[in-house]
Image 1 (tube, rainbow over the protein chains, first blue to last red):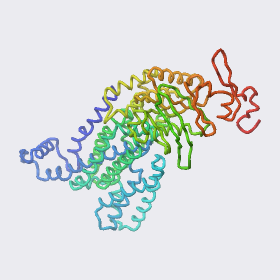
Image 2 (cartoon, chains in turn yellow, orange):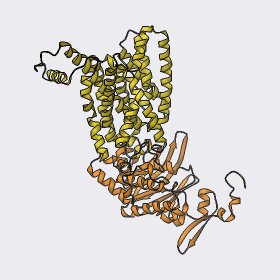
Image 3 (cartoon, rainbow over the protein chains, first blue to last red):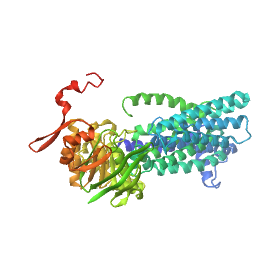
Image 4 (cartoon, rainbow over the protein chains, first blue to last red):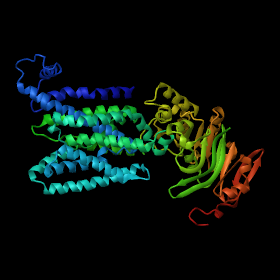
Length: 336
Length: 267
């Protein structure tokens, strides 16, 4: 019963955060304004808004705030779902998609594009993020299978390599460009635009839909390769698909929103503590909480101070103490 | 009726053959205890029956080559009870057992699958544990849950990989008695690897033993003799009969611990 209540609350959480996300920000809109603006948009411009609603309110709401809200939710969904899926296939509760080298690869790609290469930042981040995952996977692959331990170890190594390369780019980068690199590596939802949403949304939606449909199989895969086989699942091909979908979702998210830390690791844990580890519930609930959490953090980040603080700053500041608390708790016997 | 038939089978791992030229038949509805020293290939044989080991020769299950079954089909024919199970997450007992329904589940498990899982938990006498986290129950209880998960697969063959190795004295007999009971009630063909010949004598309908790399099968009485223990393990043992109940005692036991050593090379 308690679990059911928690599950309903988690599903509702994005709806609870949404109104606050709409009204808060540097340009504040009243709930009435948002009501009129939403109806104006939903009716395709037919709705008669009060004449005293300034023209810039439309621009702020539709061109700046709404894409940012949509992007924050998409990125939250993508990071949380892929974190949960990767924790299942690696049988390791301390894994997220960044641990496959993805964030370091993407950060290097973005920095390279910002500082030196004449290619779009998003494209470069996306390509290098995926490249890092492919390298990690190849390094960990041996004798037709992927062991969870070698996957994590290979990820740590590939991350280390890209981190050094990133430092190298930073050393030679123009100080003005360095600032945007630093911003990017901590999350850059403030650069959200409809173009960004359009470039990331198909990849993210496709991948998380795939993970959603694989959620029962994730239970079986989390028992380990041998047991999965004896229960009629081919772990090699299923794991490859899950890793690929997670990497794709995260790369697309990181390419438009920068590296937003800890979320992919933390959200599945919170959901597991509330409703248990069954992936049939865990995957959709992680998506819901990922969306509402990142939206809440970003709303907080853009409404408390007059300048932009990257969302990754807050997710990490809130996430890190929580994670340490969790580690201590698990030593008490939660996981092996 | 022969359910499993191996003809001239050799099993290979990456670094070479593990077993060569095995010919054996396992009959329907019987418990066969597999005996042999550590590393002789007992577990490899079980893996081979699930189609997970490279082999030459012919492994027929219900008259069809194991290679020709799909993975899901195999899981509907054979269930496997592992020696240990370390859960990565704190699944409840019901969730662990429900996983056994996978070969019969298309997209998500339905009401029928839940009912079957509950039924299987009751069959092993673990009904009171259903809602408990699997990683918080005792080793004996875990073994029962793994057996329930195998039952949930609705197979006619269940392979047990050393089901009693990690169990205490009482739980060893509890689990073996359960296996015997389930085998009789549901006409299950059970292959059980064990280390203690006494268990094979008490619970086996048949005994298959690895002697010098060869798999030999017979009744427990034929297979478990002083001579045969010598051939399997290279050690002396006596088989005694107490009012019709046979039991094996290794001869070292009667000579005191000094002859065995204390495990550190001291005598």
